[in-house]
Length: 283
Ligand code: NDP
Image (cartoon, rainbow, N blue to C red; front, top):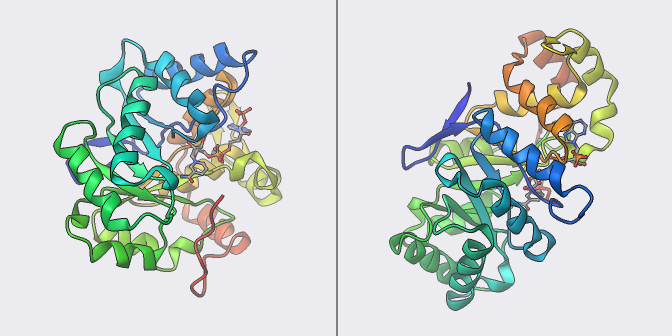
């Protein structure tokens, strides 16, 4: 199984599980919990959530799914920029831990940049790490210039991850950000790797490539090719969200798909890599 390794030496499968919008519907709850548990059963460990998602409902659902299995999970959550002051970050972290039913996060991220000085947030994240509430800290939606600014802050060299929008339709980070983060031992976490289930999954080139790959349950799907592509990048952890067991199983099987150089060329011809710097896209 392809893995990525964080700066503290912890390795995780390169495919994880997102959770935005999970926990919002009573009708889907059982299937959503089953999907996350099936992930753990199959050896996936990363679950990504945030205090923002459903105002805590996603964290509560994740807490339900991982109850009694905390040691199998690499748990990521995020603090909202509006809460990222010294006292606010600590409070948000404690609230997330309570909703998740745990005493520690494996990775805690600043969700995006806001008005609180970055030094204050970084200092607090490092304090939470020293206090054992979080194992590692990182950032999200940080472009190259944000990472440069971060570099100038004391302790920033312990930043472990940058979670960004990255999929076949949004490849801007390949211009300089991915390499920069890799050189600095910062894992890139690719969010919305399926393009949020939109047009990407109806792309004819993805459909053609999918037909060339067999999986245990028949020909591959465009979603699996989109995921296999993100997973194939070095130092990238991909976190699709699946709201059902059916989608989860399909996504899990993408880990076994190996794209050929011919596939990659076709994908590059269809979804070109960036030729110049563009601002990091975000959702
Ligand atoms: P994704 O690209 O993961 O797409 C999720 C959508 O794709 C859902 O509608 C889902 O439907 C559908 N889907 C999942 N699997 C399949 C499949 N095999 N075939 C067809 N459709 C499928 O989008 P997200 O925006 O959810 O991103 C993933 C995760 O990244 C989030 O859940 C969140 O944890 C994180 N994130 C972080 C952000 C940040 O700012 N740091 C911003 C956005 C996301 P269904 O639910 O029915 O399975």
